[in-house]
Image (cartoon, rainbow, N blue to C red; front, side):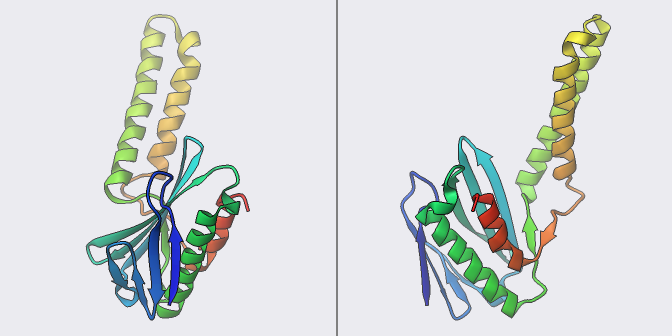
Length: 184
């Protein structure tokens, strides 16, 4: 039995995860790894923090393992070491149990649709600003903000298109990705 303890966010208490004999136990759940139907990883940066989430899906039930680390010096924190150790042990175990399982990289479901919608609104807003400025003879002043909004929206649209599945990665690459994201 291997136990991992870390705080999922600065204001939340330490949480405990246990991996033993094909079972992963979280704060208030227990998952049989053989029953895992999908695995996902999402990463964000906001307000000087990296927000990571591992989604473990079993049928229609999704269990989440969160980590919230400082952007600077994350690789030296105890929370990173514990999250990294848990992710490494988990993907190692899953690779033996289900060699075909891949990790979905990026947001999915409702959140993916919401981000896509924000991209559409941004691109249309930029287009509206550009057209409105053009009609008033002020295109030169509005060109940069309009173009930036259109490009920002296009990036969100392309990276979160609901008709395209998130990219999938080999689980064995996750520990190296975590180390790189943490600056280690």
